[in-house]
Amino acid sequence: MTGVGGAGEWLGEWLGRAVRAVGAWEERFGGYVRHPALAVGGGELESAFERLVERLSGNYPFFHPRYAGQMLKPPHPAAILGYVTAMLINPNNHALDGGPPTAHMEREAVARLADMFGYGTHLGHLTSSGTIANLEALFVARELHPGQGIAYSAEAHYTHARMCRVLGVEGHAVPADQRGRIDLDALEDLLRTGRIGTVVLTAGTTGLGAVDPIHEALGICRRYGTRIHVDAAYGGFFTLLAGQELDPAPWRAIAECDSVVVDPHKHGLQPYGCGAVLFRDPAVGRFYVHDSPYTYFTSDELHLGEISLECSRAGAAAAALWFTFELLPPTRQGLGEVLAAGRRAALAWAGLLEKSPVVGLYQRPELDIVAYFPNLPSLSEIDRKSAEMMERGMTDDPARAVYLSTFQVAAPALVARHPGVHADAPGGRVLRSVLMKPESEHAVEHLHARVEELAAGI
Ligand SMILES: *Cc1c(COP(=O)(O)O)cnc(C)c1O
Image 1 (spheres, rainbow, N blue to C red):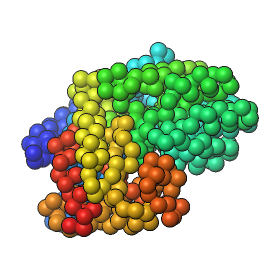
Image 2: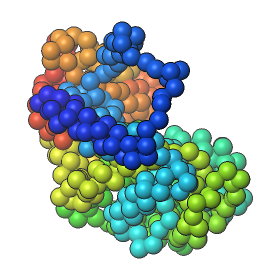
Image 3: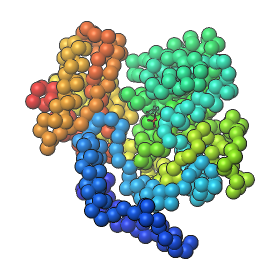
Image 4: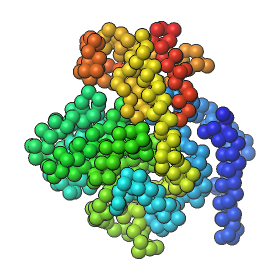
């Protein structure tokens, strides 16, 4: 398959069509003279573009099935087309003055996300990222439980602890169990102290893809009157597989939680700059109340900027998500097919790793993240060899290169899963692969064979 994102020739043609369509729209407003200060072209353009392309060639091949490292892949060509078409106009979704059409597209796309999580009512919007989306959820949580702390699992995203500091709230890390999920007994012990106002549960941890038992935590949190926020930045779209491939209980329970965050720029095929936060109770909009001397002139309708902490935001991001959902909707048959393939790839690879004499499976994958390590007697050897395998995978034998990532684990976590390993260091690196492209399914055998070779020093 050639062409960006396997789009063959169509993306190039359609990008040209986008430029023509927006040009035709511009003509409706009458001609005008462009200022010479803005002129570029000719040889300078040619050479600057060459330098740009040369610079960009230093990237890792995120698009390729043999790239099985971090949570990275290019957007779907449809998202690129939606983004670029709207970006040629460059609406700002802060306020309706910045362009009503993309603000409405944002509402519609966010409503589809709310539906996906089973929210009957919602208030929500897109954000620049999962971090900002989580910050907004924790900000609202702090307003509702002033003076109380926020609890999250030790495996939760590192930004929760950081945002607690930003918000001036006490953050509490709760230990994780042997599958990387929040330990409910430890959580309840903490809630008993009365110091916690909000619990953050993670639906798909960034490290291992572990899903906290949200359905079980729900009852505990209710008993102590705490608010629940679900961080599904990475895992949220896996709810499309609930009841089919995945145990539905934790996913269905999200509908009962107070807020949820999902990143369309991770598993929603979007370019960076697209997170989302949803609140179940629209009344929390009151915490955002502010006035702006610059904006909010054109309509009495609620402006997105009135319910978000950020000001300017790309309307193009909303157009891209809306357009992608028109073609690949957030349903089991639509986007669900993409996630299901990556998860099948992770399970298939896990099966091979379990049988291998030279590499071992760190833990069974729940979603599409596989963690594994060279079979060596001690943690320090595993650490050194994992780093070497990642490096050599990329550089040796370029035609068969594999791109992996490492993941830092604590000695007790490794030993709990693999009691035979000698814990001669407090922690160390194992290998980790996020199989988030559906094409990963066809690459599993190669990835496994190459990883076995690297472990054997070949
Ligand atoms: C990626 C991630 C975040 C942070 O999101 P960004 O979009 O990278 O800012 C937060 N939580 C989880 C679980 C994540 O996987």
